[in-house]
Length: 473
Image (tube, rainbow, N blue to C red; front, side, top):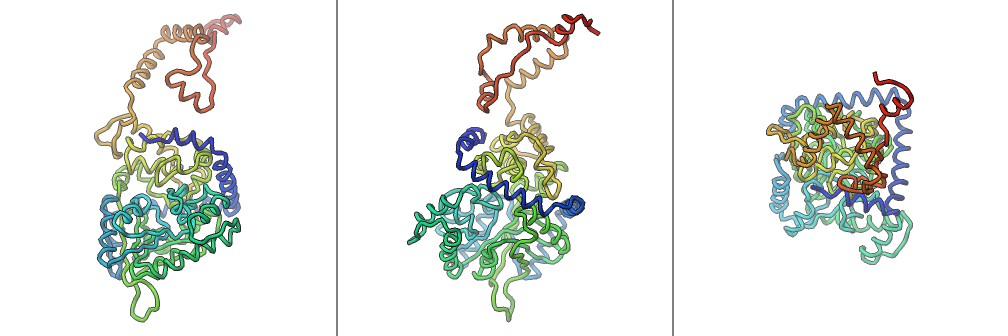
C-alpha cells in the first residue's frame, strides 16, 4: 500500500507548508469565484464543457484514428504507447536518432507520469524543465506539488535560498522580479542550445490534426519552436472532435485553474516548419499514451475520469489537499483527481489508499468544470478495493480486503439482524465502556487523527424511555 497516512501526518506538523498553501489556495479560490460570478453563465458553460468531453469520449477510438490521419497529413509523426516504458523508449529513440543530448521541456503532467526526466538522464540526456515552477522544484530534486502550480508549496524566501545555493553566481535576494530574471538568464541560453524540445498537449483536435497548448510564460512556445525537434506527449483522452470545441474548454480551463479570462499564450501547432517559414521545428512528433486509460474507458462509470481537463480546481477547494499538500500523495496527480486517477493507472494495491483520503464533502464536484462525479467514483474505487472481481476494470481489485475486517462486518450483520443479540451487545458495551482502553485496534488510527474515542451510552434509548414510563411499541 501507499504511504499517504504517515506523509499526511508529517505535512500537518509543517506550519510553513500549511501557511504557504493557505495563502495560495485562498487567492486561487477568490480569483476563480470572481470570474464565475454569473451563476447562469457558469451553469451553461459547464454543461457545454461536459457535453464536449462526453461527446469526444463516446467516439474516442474513431477520433484518435482521425487525429492520427490528419496529423500525418500535416507532417506530424504519430506514435502509440500502451505503457509508460514504451513511451519513454519511443522518446529516447527519437532523441538518439538525431544525436540529441539536451532537451528543454514545457509543462507536461504525462511526462511526470512517465518519470521521463530520470529515464533520459539515465541514458545521458539532460532534460531541463523550463516552466518556472517546474524549474524551481527540479533544482530542489522534488516532484510537483500541484498540476498547475508545481512549486506552490514554496514561498519566496525558500526559493531565494534555493537559487542562491543552486544557480552559479546568484546572489540572495527576495525580490521576485530579480529571482525570475535569474531563471530567465539560465533558461534563455538553454532554449538556444537545446537539441530538442518537449511539450504536453491540452487539447488535440481530430478535425484538423492540431495540438493546442496553453501557458503563461512563453517557455512552451520556445520549447516548441526554437529546437529543431519537437516531441509532444499526451494521454489518449485529450482528443476533442472539432476546432470549435476548444474555445469553451479553454475558457473553463483558464478560469478554473488560475482565475484568468485566458492565458498569455495559446499555441496551435499543426505542422513542422514549412518552406518559407522563418521559425519552427524541422520535425514534430506526437506520442499518445494509454497507461491504463483504455481500461477505465471500458467501464461506463469510470470513463468519466477521462473527462478531466487538468485545471486543478478540485485541488484548490479540497479540504484534505489544501492542508497536506501534493507531496503527501506520492503520485504524479495529487488531490481529488489523483485519488480517482492513480488507482486506475497504477492499481489498487499501489494507490488504492488514495481513494480513502477524502471526506466526500463534494467540494471538488461542485467546482469541476466538466462535472466529473469525483465523490461517486471514490466510493466506487473503495468498493473495488474491498471486493475481488475477475472482471474488474481496475488493477488488483480486492487488494484492500482484510479477513479480520470482513469477519467483523459479518458478525455485526448477524448481531444487527437479531434483536436479542443487539440488545445484549448494547448492554455489554454500555456496562464495560469505562474499562476499555482509550486506543486499541482500529481506534488507534482514529485517535491519531486528533479525535476522541467514541463513548457507549450506559442506557439504551429503549431503556431511557421505559424509565420515563413510555412503553415499547
